[in-house]
Length: 285
Image (cartoon, rainbow, N blue to C red):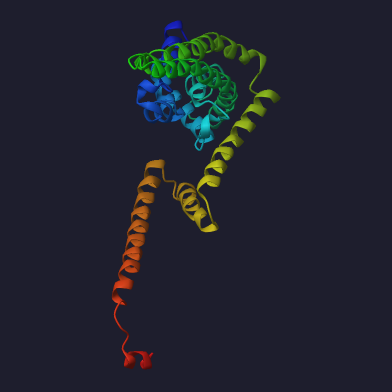
């Protein structure tokens, strides 16, 4: 599998759109189009192997399932993971002759995605730094009362930042990187220690993403129960993700109804006890 200039250019466009304000902000751009789960689908369509693209995207999504960017601080760039890491992982999986849904293919995809995601932080901060230039121009336009110039500051100039730090790096890394990844087939054989190390590290990386997610939402030991129930369903009953989601939705609705009933009773209790207390009832108590 190789990545042509046309395919690399399309990947570069999606890498730019995944964090552009013009894509309805971060809701559609970064937190939807830029996620590996969606990026795998897009990369699969562009490179002509939908099954492998989705499988690589799902594997990488586990690692970055709880990734957030508080205050612009990022430990990895999912834009690079989705549109640089997934295409290169697809090339690596294909060159090694691995099945798209095999465990080794998923582990290899996770390792490559993590490597590219770390490198992508340079592109993220480069984009943010260059956008400060346009922000400064916007403030000067406001001070002068030239409000029409804000359209160019918000919708035009940021494309320059993404052209330099998103489009061009994505095109170059995917096109030339595919040749380098294919060369690893002879340099790093499947039964060698380096490849076995990549598989081992890749198998452990989802634990990092799940641990970060648990740290954010678990407040007490009882909060672990929903996660244990999901893993139990998947392991013992062999339920797929859709089935587990439906069962989880049922339990979520039951929990919601119980919480609503408890809150209603608490609000009604003061109204019922608002009158005077009878002496005979007090003696009976």
